[in-house]
Image (cartoon, rainbow, N blue to C red):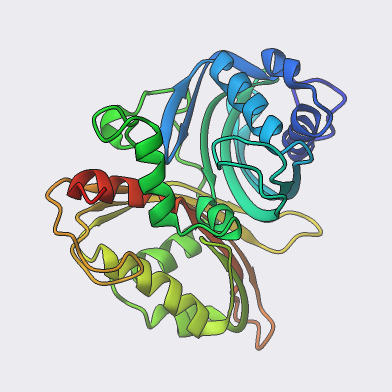
Length: 331
């Protein structure tokens, strides 16, 4: 771990360790140490440049959810300490909605939701980030439909003219990380499966997913088997049948004491012109952009033929609805 604090055993320990230190141990000031001053943080909702914006957002979240935990389920990574490393960090977060904030008046509801954060780190600092939080799971647990949350957010931000616009490639800012992951076979296998699904080859699911696959999807969905995967991916793709699917980052890993696994960051960019999980097609002429992230684990339970046995896939439903509502004016 050349260039990193020797207290960290390896890169996953660094990523999991600083996350706990910042959030749960209240070491918010360590962001000056662990985050570069001009870091670029992209989320489906926005692009933020600079450490001060990250610090402000962190404090606002902890003010609203003071008991928030971020439990690191996995860190799937590529690169080297010398050239820089990219982690795809999957977190299972818990939090009680204790105080007023961006989600409205406190409800006292205990939340559980997932996050996938892709972070580039070098010399003990994170300087580039892609952050996807399962906003659909959060607002549903608070008793709010994602579409209505997006509509209310637009109103609270001052209406469509004043409202901040969700992330699209047009507003992206180039950061220091220029990589695309690695060429490990498990990342390539998962990329091939997802690409075939997005090209309408849904027969890939019974062919490549284990029949007992455990699945966790956007909106807090916990699903099982071929039917669960088919319903999620079909519902998303059917809403944007002509959108361009693109894989932006791909990692595969074989690590001791861990199953073979893969991490993908991907997008769908196109018109909402189909019936699917986003309801009636709007025919909006402005393109919708979806930033998504997925993790998968593989195994060979029967006959030595590896199949996808666990999958996590998230995107921000509220950011998609915000784009749709801003385009249609249905406010």
